[in-house]
Image (cartoon, rainbow, N blue to C red):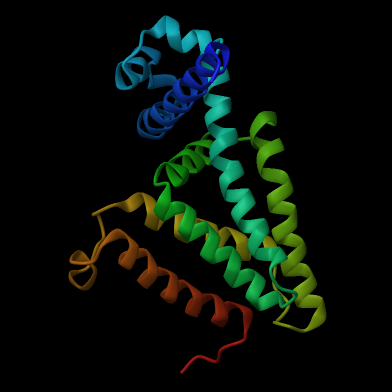
Length: 211
């Protein structure tokens, strides 16, 4: 391995560590309160070194959002492309959102912060990340309604219910854990929640009759 290649690998590794630390700090404190010096301390480098990889805090924050939302988008689209069955597509979308939330707790917090600050709509940079995925999911719900796979319903309402419920659950932590879930691992807890949410979704779609 050449010296140039080793340097490139070190830069790539450092950049990844900065993004990981920044993701946690932005999710915990929000954009305004998160500090580059704290992010640098977590990585074990100087603030100047952070600015070597990212020109300023807004650039770093945008890189964090791109990495985070791309992971979700890729997972959801993969599930939507896996089947032509509209009900299975929606359930796959739920699986993807829950899997990403369980594997990346920062995702839901970052999303909630962006939603809370979006008084007149998402910022352009965030809209560019979210719009393609949102449009794809809306199209799936509309096509499923037209085909008769499930009842006619407002796709925005459905997406809001499902995304909102999962985001709330992922960010609530220990706040509302019941006695039955207190002894479960994170993986088991999210799986139990997934099963409950799939059941609720089937009621919403009209594919499962209430008892």
